[in-house]
Image (cartoon, one colour):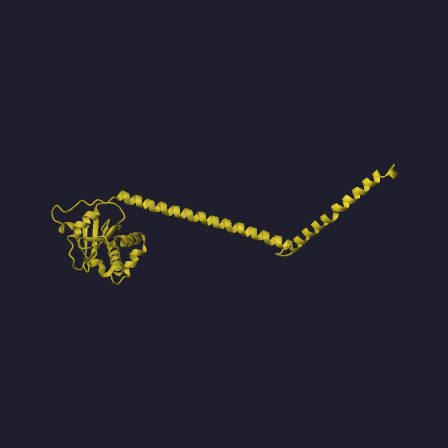
Amino acid sequence: MTIVYAVVARGKVVLAEHTSTSGNFPTVTRVLLSKIASIDAKMSYVYDDHVFHYIVENGITYLCLCMNQEKTKRRVAFAFLEDTKIRFQNQFGSIAHRAPAFTMNEEFSKILQRQMIFYNSDPGADDLTKVKHQLDDVKSVMVENIEKVLERGEKIELLVDKTDRLNQSAFRFEKTSRQLRNALFWRKIKVYFFITALIAFAIFLLTAYSCGGFAFPNCSSSDKKSSQKQHGNKKPHSSLHKENLQKRRFLLSPFSY
């Protein structure tokens, strides 16, 4: 079972909706909403290879469209609707009874999208519904053909773009693969950085050990001694200048001949 469309409405007034694919089911849903009574009820309508499931409570309709009518998965559809109902009531309360069309769409369509993904893809969603005590037995929910509520000429061919749905699945797979590649890349970078830092730290420890400590006392003292030795071997510039003058005077004196 795949939930492809969900809507929250007050009578014919759509307050929020979301779809995971393209098709004309919003148009079909508008016709169906005009036929649903405002009294509290749970119902399923078969529409060719699709099924509309809905819950009406306090004048608000919570409806979803599924791709098939597998009976064992009907409880998942109604669990999704119950979850949607609770979240919508907690977030908006009585405001929904006087709000204009699509007032909640910007906020609540994101919640519909997130919950549709969960109930469509998470294997635990079906197990979760089995332990929810607030859910009635879905076997007692009536299932009728939609032609019973639509008048002659009102039935519109339901078109659901399966190709687009497959493309979206491929896009999600590609996005997941790209995220995985990025995660692996950055993990390698972290490993390389850690190894480089470890090698640098090991070199630092070896150098400190050979130089007598972290302050490198042996290495610094040996450098000072070598520099002092080099300076000691050099004669001062002034003494050299005096020696040269004395030699020149001796050579120029008359006794040198």
